[in-house]
Image (cartoon, rainbow, N blue to C red; front, side, top):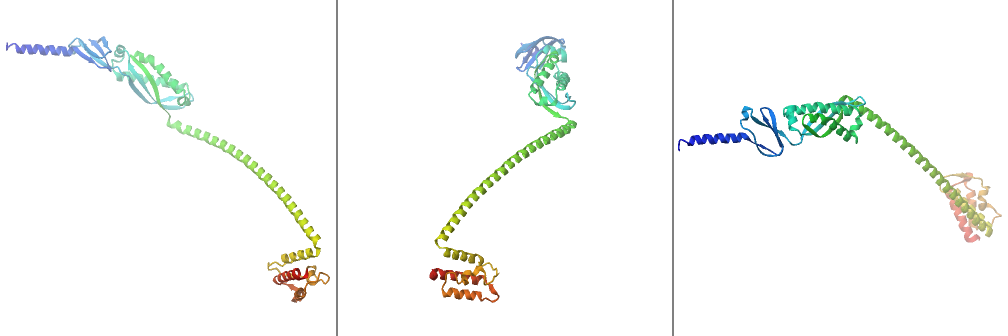
Length: 335
């Protein structure tokens, strides 16, 4: 019995090795291509544990795992020319998955890098065709979605020949090249300056209209105010004249005297002015006229003193005092 234990152990090890070589596991994100002497005999798309013939090292049966999930392939700095003749740099990416593992194995030997290299060439050509039919503004407008769908539809036949299914194509960036950027900037600057000039001209025109309307309204308001002021002034002058006329009718002599006193006050105001008048001037009638209504002796005495001033120079301060005194005396004692 003891001699049989090594033999049993060897047999068990061989069985375990054969079992291990015959079993393979497919995960949820994978697909398995079962090969026998380099030929595809089966494809496992569902996750689980599967069996195959052992001795893969003799090229009997082997398993190649490929991705089942959606993968992304980026393509940067693609130089494309639009319909206007200008060049632009475009960044894009493709979302794809391996839909036919058999075709994928036959076309690119199941190598993702080789498949993406072929997609790069086809994506570059599709982008050039799509951009070449449009101008630059199309990539920045609502037409951008249509452009991406066109690129996707152009890629799908070529991708199908590789066993791939194109889920989506997206354009991440569309920029001007260095030589075109300055030209576009200058053109946009000129357009903005022209638009600014147009807006400024419209603003100046509107300002002139508003200013002219305001000036016209000012003239109208001032004219109306002057008209009303002249009317009020005329009415005041008429009322003033009527008041003076009524006062003159009541006592002409007093009215003349009152007017003369006002004239004295106006002419002899303390302005520092020196007046040179003749003693016989009508201005001093109430100082010297014997025919006028006689005032008191004090008034006549003051008048004589005024008339005897050397060189007949009447000083403002003295005449004002005399005029006030004569008025007071005449009002108190002469009437």
